[in-house]
Amino acid sequence: MRLQEDKVYGQQANRQAFVGGWWSLAMNVVLTVAKGVVGLAAGSPALFADGVHSAADVMGSVAVMVGLWIGRKPPDADHPYGHGKAELLSSGIVAGVLLAAGVEIAVAAVRSMGERPTVPGVAAAWTAASAILVKEWLYRYNYRLGRRLHSRSLLASAADHRSDVLSSSAALTGIMLCLLGAHSHVGWLLYTDSAASAVVAVLVVKMGYEIAVDAVHVLMDRVMEGDEILPYRNFIASVTGVCRIDELRVRDHGQYVIIDVEISVQGDLSVSTGHGIATRVKEELMQQFPLVRDVWVHVNPVEVKEPHNGFLRP
Image 1 (cartoon, rainbow, N blue to C red):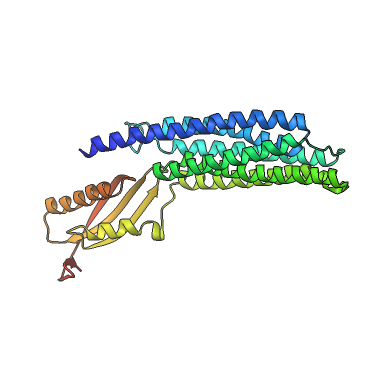
Image 2: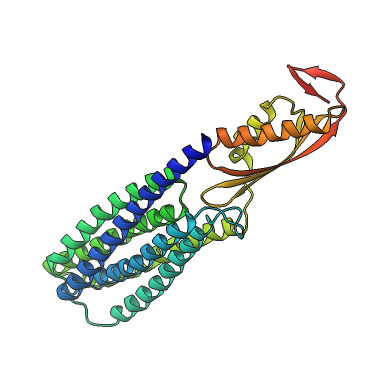
């Protein structure tokens, strides 16, 4: 029954994840074209820089789709823990693309600061404002979906959308100040459009760095600590027959976790009984926590002197 339920849940999760990925890809394509065309036509370096950011997002969205496709493949002989870390590779690609785009935008911003400023058209402001609304919706949609499906790719995509909101906000601010400068004849305000593109570059690089660091931590089998493992520890301790927990490691694999635990059981129990307790720990953990993909239980014998609170304690 559980295998059938997991299969149904996995199929639903796959469909929802791919819907989120396709939405992101489609919107990024539309925004790339709109920002690029309007940015050039309206003479706005900030909006064009934001368009370069969106072009990088298109590549990132493709990487997310590939990561989702590979990551949802079931375990096989060569990959007994599944393919979940493929999503982390796609997160790394998203980070790399963002870092490269940030550098490119920064170079363009510095170059434009040395040139004669131009006053952007009002269409640039409307385009930037529209992009903010679209990207904020995409951020909320992908973040909620990524949290519910425990998808690193979708969470990385959500973080990317939030960086777009910030970069488009910076671009809109620069455009509006530049228009204000032209209207009020304040010369230095004419450079705010170019300055805004430099701010966009900083935001893009920062977001790329944060996504890269998070992906590297998980790829290196980061072990969860503190409050993160407390629910697992409390549940294992409540399993009948467990005297104490000697060691507990919960490894983060992106979409799922793997648990290694050493438990102590009453020393005079038979091997069969001790094995039964270990099996119960594994099965009940996987039933209670959907994120747990596998559990390795090592059993240690302990001399038990007296019962304590209904459980045997050394």
